[in-house]
Image 1 (cartoon, rainbow, N blue to C red):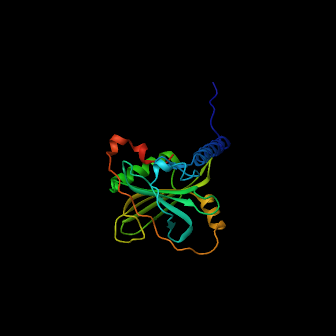
Image 2 (cartoon, rainbow, N blue to C red):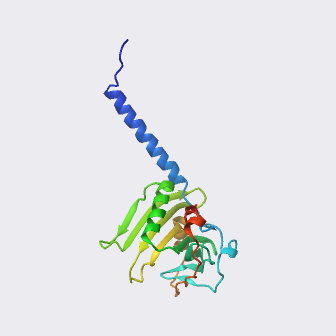
Image 3 (spheres, rainbow, N blue to C red):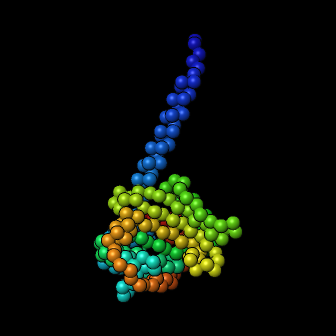
Length: 214
């Protein structure tokens, strides 16, 4: 009986096939980017999702006068949250969602991070500082409904008002944000929306999937 040995050609072919399969898996995963967070959907209007938001007088995002800000209604497991919506290209259309988790511990942050990696793969960017008080991971994904989506998970402990204290997550439809920016003309004054207190529900009771975008 003759023995067959895998020559260099077969080894190279196997490596190439493995690389193609991994790349294809990453592409499929990237195409399944999220378009909703905490039950709120990007691309839909604030009117369509009025039951999940706290209606308020027109408020403009700080440094982004082409976007309005509306607080998210009280929701278990989250401390507060808000949405940015269009004021020009498509009035009322939600283009960004940010939620602040009720649990501000680093342990919870790590649990969310691992869950996001399993769902969307390794993040593309990391930002932080030498003291470990700021940790930010960013994914660049794509949703079939709203196109490119930026997903950012952040943990911060400190006194810098530029960052939200505790754990937070944000998704944004970057093409929709850009459309509002291009449409807008002329400066406008505004202020940030105020956070809304939320009841801190038990993590295990809610399930980790409750805290992840879809």
